[in-house]
Length: 93
Image 1 (cartoon, one colour):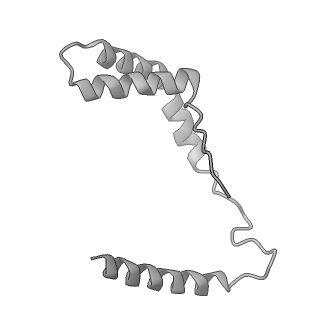
Image 2 (image 1 turned 90 degrees about the vertical axis):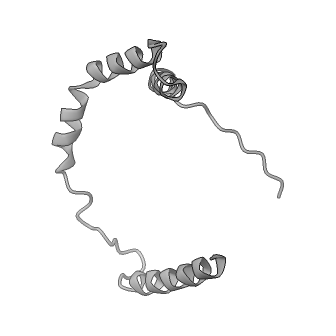
Image 3 (image 1 turned 90 degrees about the horizontal axis):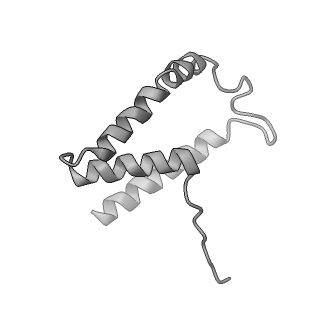
């Protein structure tokens, strides 16, 4: 299986490098930028923020809910309220 993954990855890199040759150095592959169509969806999702937080609180406080669901709800609330914890990586060079 590992051999197949290696061959597949090599083929993907070959095609990726061929695609990269289309643009001149310093030229953007997407000069128009990201399409603006997702703004409406983002705003629609944000209108449900209060309900989503209330649902997470309900799941977190439900003693009959599966343990994994309660932990996941608590983590989601903490991440949104306090931000995700900083991961410190120590490397020797």
